Image 1 (cartoon, rainbow, N blue to C red):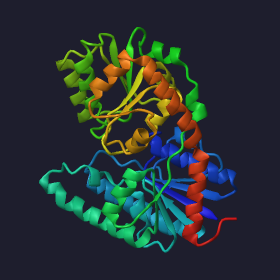
Image 2: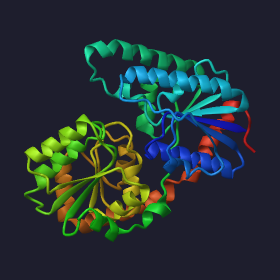
Image 3: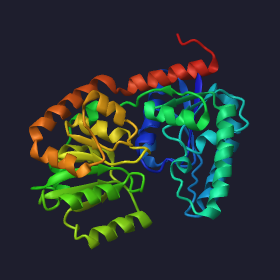
Image 4: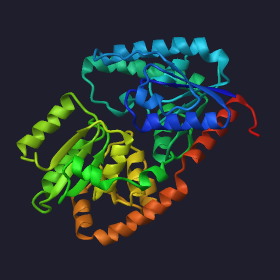
Length: 379
């Protein structure tokens, strides 16, 4: 079997990109030929690929009209999928708009749907943009229903959301976690680098976007700064533009400069060190992305707080390995006042992650879906 992995630009080493690296390396170890087609591949990600042919188009679309750039990206990927498809047995598409690129391709396709297109999730569009976006989404839905017969999602929440949008059931395959990697970290390195000594450290990991809800974390610290005088929020993730400016203006207006740290983009080593340096991971994320961070923090035996909208919140609630709430301030205060109680919960979470979230298990189940897609029984 030969697998063509297709994804949009891979310039930031986030969770979705890590998933692709893990899957591609697993395929290579199992002797399954694979190639990665993407519009852009950063050297940081490429160096972690072992045995995967990379078909990077070296094209980064600028800051122009998003809809136009998305359309151009679809057309570019679609053209190359058509050129390469006959050399592969199955196409494995990942993040939007990769799934649209299989339009017209008579080849078994498996979509690892980390989440629906962002336009499905963010409906706050000005009136002139609503019609063209709806047209694009209608076309995307048509392509998925006609050309994508096998879909995988990470959890029950995403499965139910997918079925509401597209009208058929996907398979649920939980992501893996690098337990061995995140189990150990250099706490001292992070504390020195970001001046975290003598602080109660609240960590928020993720790119700065409204859907990651860094504003929610900042407002939580605002509520707590008089009750936890040494509280410090670390916002670990890349972010520029209007949203970051809005965050910075709010911080200045509320005199929170001493309570909030922006780290910018960090490599995985630095994120791992921050997990070990923090007192709690706060994840007030809306229903988009961010699946890995809470479980990574549990590897470091740290208490986690996630929003009710976080897509894996049902797992965290069911297993009793963290706090699921929208009252973030009260949850942090409880952890601050009862550290022993939450250490035990985090310890239980650490053991659960080690025993249940494994990248080889994830990849093996994905390969099973590939074989089903091409109608061949795996031996």
